[in-house]
Length: 71
Ligand SMILES: [Zn+2]
Image 1 (spheres, rainbow, N blue to C red):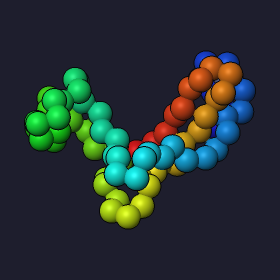
Image 2 (image 1 turned 120 degrees about the horizontal axis):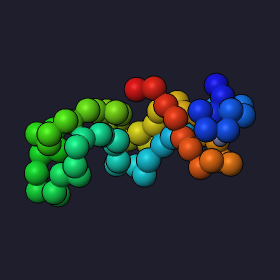
Image 3 (image 1 turned 90 degrees about the horizontal axis):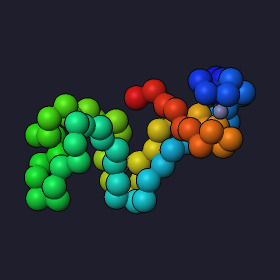
Image 4 (image 1 turned 180 degrees about the horizontal axis):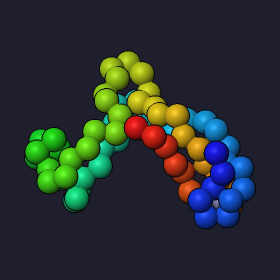
């Protein structure tokens, strides 16, 4: 995969979290006391995986500091 900014080859690898993290996307960041899934525009990017680092295959361009992934 080539970088959409500089068009150079991107490094394939994994985006991963601390041991209890998971990634989501939404219109805004929910407060800590709110159920994140009820936030406007919520999209689950990675499910929580107990006992594993949550991870997703990703491509990185270190020149542009861009990480891209399909979910
Ligand atoms: Zn780039």
